[in-house]
Image 1 (cartoon, rainbow, N blue to C red):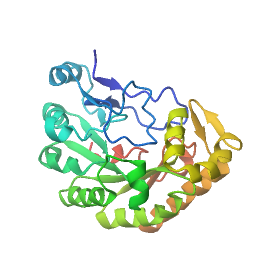
Image 2 (cartoon, rainbow, N blue to C red):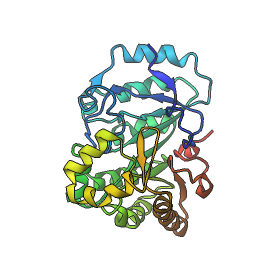
Image 3 (cartoon, one colour):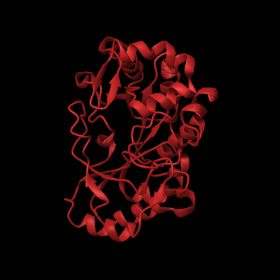
Length: 286
């Protein structure tokens, strides 16, 4: 079975990602983010290692065209907590050193700093997700992920080492985190990030149930916005377009003021993009 696959966002018409490949070193993720969309995978919050991972990657890479983008990861964080012990993500990066590839790392963990020596030798970029700075909020949103302050320090260290870095301000929650977006962007700018991609919370059924349990009062207030005024696209519920656009425009203004590349993720506002890509892959050298 292949472990490096063409990225396929379920045929979503709102996806603007460039052609790329996806590699999830683990099945599942231990960060246990309540908004996770990938929990359709059985036992997703109990991550498992993949058997013969390096051998399977070596086989898969033989068929991938030189210069291709490989994203780690689009569902399971490559630096899920168990990677500190097993280092399967580091083994993946070691394996890809012998190929002409462009590597995009997407993570919520400062564990990425462990692999700076490899990232220097690869054509690479890193995007780190930050959704909230307030401890009482981010600990409920992302129970097992490192603090946002550790992620900001990771951005700073990566940029210091010459590794292009972006911020995923993703997702933004109505009433809960929307007012923090400016401060998050300000701190990311101070850390040296060159790119911001943002999106609004788009719950699926299980994600909404987790959100409702963690933030019952907020969920009660915004429920009509999703399930009465909003719309269902694919398996996700979207806020009304006017509200989403207002949230996204505010982030864009913050980025333009600071000279940072800006993009959205699955919002349908591709005309607002100022960056060379939505996912940050344009940061990687050709």
